[in-house]
Amino acid sequence: MNDPTARTLALLSLLQTHRYWKGSELAGRLEVSERTVRRDVDRLRQLGYPVDAEPGTDGGYRLAVGAHVPPLLFDDDEAMALVVGLRSTALAAIGGIEDAALAAMTKLDLILPDRIRRRIEALRSSVEVMTWGGPTGTLVSAEALTVLSQGCRDHEEVRFDYERRDGEQSARLVQPHQLVAAGRRWYLVAWDVRRADFRTFRVDRMSGLPTLAGARFEPRELPAEDAVTFVRNGMRSAIVEYTATVTVSGSADDVRNFARWLADDIETLRDGRATVRLRGENHDWLAATIAMLATHFDIELDDVDDRVCDQLSQAASRLGGL
Image (cartoon, rainbow, N blue to C red; front, side, top):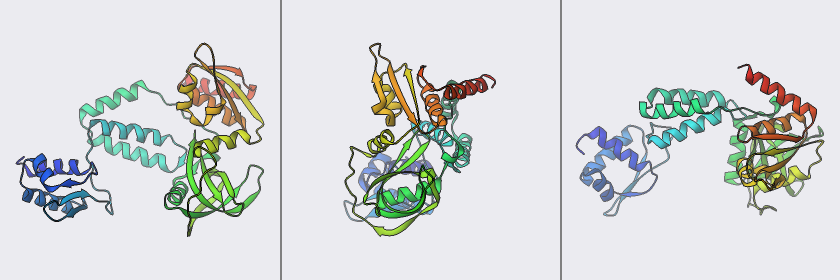
């Protein structure tokens, strides 16, 4: 490969696989000498790509984590996955993330080759997405999720003010275990230090921004198969005022894969369909969950409150007027 620019881009593509490459392997892939590989690595460093190198006869290279985001290379499938992921993120219940996701999609659209753009346009024209969710209070901030996820990753205690369902407010110190997204709601599974037990906290009920407390901890064993199961069990045991039952066109496994937090509330029918029993603290959540299921399945309303039916009818009318 004689063109230095094309060779440097090919080298970058290989390094972005995040594996460790021996210098001889890279030289063989690029059909150049190891000395040329060293020059191309220096060129990448000048462009802002941090490349770690190990000296010696068996030495090699690996792309390191940098202080900023340099240009990236994607193949066709990776570009498609990125655009689809950004589109989903733009519809998420995370405050401030929508504009950033849309801006990133716009930048990608300007540089994508025609063959990928045609594939994306075909996807956009064939798929409609129905947004769903409860009141605006369910919106969470990206900053809060960042702090909580950092606490989960680094095993660092977190402080925050919290408002319970009954309105009682308290200051909490927790050892975060994992974040769980259930539809458009976010939950934190954590060990409550003062109550000496695992608890589930709705992130949208945290007042202000949670903060890292600085103290590290040894992770505890969760009293459930995983965090999703723990949150789901908490939902089932909570006192709820509203329920609904619907029948969906998919199998029980299909529904579980689509909405994992409903796993224990699904019953398989003889005709291959499934009955889903919903429990919620308000009509908004029930209507939103049914609407979410309707984006993927045909729905029959078996035992649904009139207020929920009215909300679904109003939503259908508005969609019909678009």
